[in-house]
Figure 1 (cartoon, rainbow, N blue to C red):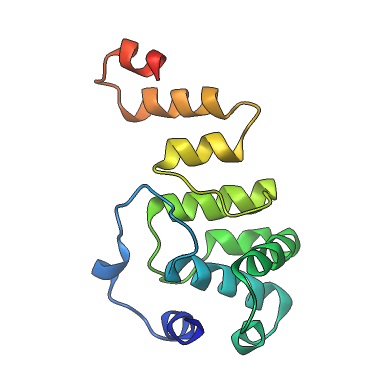
Figure 2: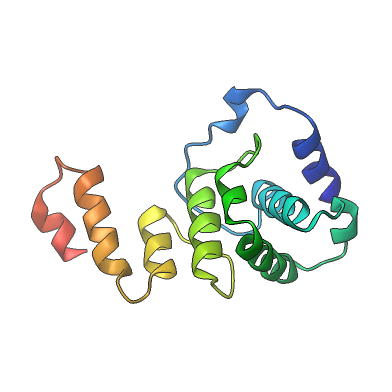
Amino acid sequence: MLLIVMLCLAHKIPDRLLRLEGQQCNGFTVGVVAALTFIITKAAGIAPADLTGLSEQALWRIACKAHAKRPDLVHHLPDIPLTRGEFHAIRWGLEKKTDTLPMGKDIFDITDRTHPAHGGLMSRTLQIIAYTKRPMNDLVSR
């Protein structure tokens, strides 16, 4: 898997392959691992090969520490095949320093997990903005 990550970071992949429309984050995909590797290596100045053998959870914890050092890196990721949901999970998970990578079926579900105190309200507000033509009763019942 590390070889695939290094290839993603080293070579420019055509943009048509990178525009993944998915809203979900199902875990540590190649794109998620590549993004975390990029953040860690740029913030700490270490080689990607130094991260071999680490568990996904250890990679996440190190990425949280690296993000605290360089929070700008998450907004300047190279061309990595991430879904919108994966990017949202990485960004908000690192910012909120969650224990694990937030996973969910869509951005609203991920928002609920990363903002437990007010995630439901944020999620409903995002739904109202994103789905303006949807009847209000459908949004309230959710």
